[in-house]
View 1 (cartoon, rainbow, N blue to C red):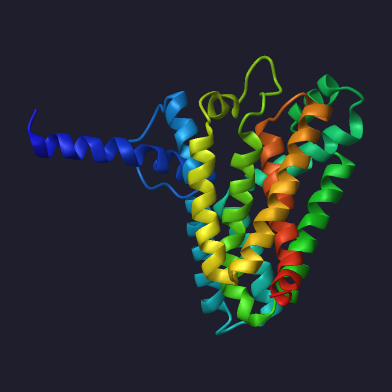
View 2 (spheres, rainbow, N blue to C red):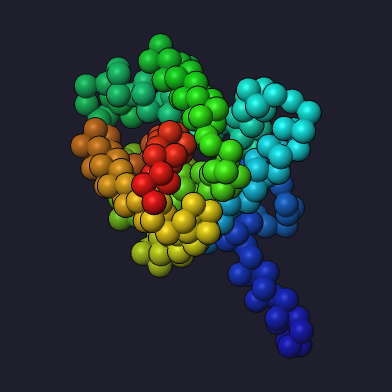
Length: 264
């Protein structure tokens, strides 16, 4: 095999996990040739989740700066939420609604998982989804202007880091398998570490070392609580639960980051 061809092949192999992460987390295709990932590649793709989150945040920040030239901040906040939902296909919002329905209607883990399979949205799921969007809007509206750019960039990265951290060392809840099962099979601490380093670097640059440490510290506590809750109420994690985790962490970050930065 020629050296040049071998180098191209090696580069393509290294970029595959990033492409899988991008395609899973966004609705924007960047490659038509990367298909049929192995379980190991799916696990490795989770190491790129924070990076993909930063890219999503970059799109939000760029849209924010452009839209604010023509529209009022209140309108821009709504459009940013719409853009985020469209970019991610509403995947995490769907997970939040399903999780709330499962918690509301099931007495056992099996009941909750069965309810979450139902494609229809119940009253609590719809209410929780509405309130989550309202809280996002309020958080964006309350953001101090100097924090707006770094928070928009870092927020999606933090949520996706939380997904990876909750998934690590967690059992898959459904015995029959499911979408998230393949991701968990080979997920290791190396993937969590890489995702964490990317996030810590971005937060430190964006909001400062003290606020970054406080954010990560609170994130770790929440991840541990969510992981324990998943074990108790559902017997493990599912894709819906990871999506709900992303929503909760992002919204809390939006609401709390002004206070964390003020403590510097």
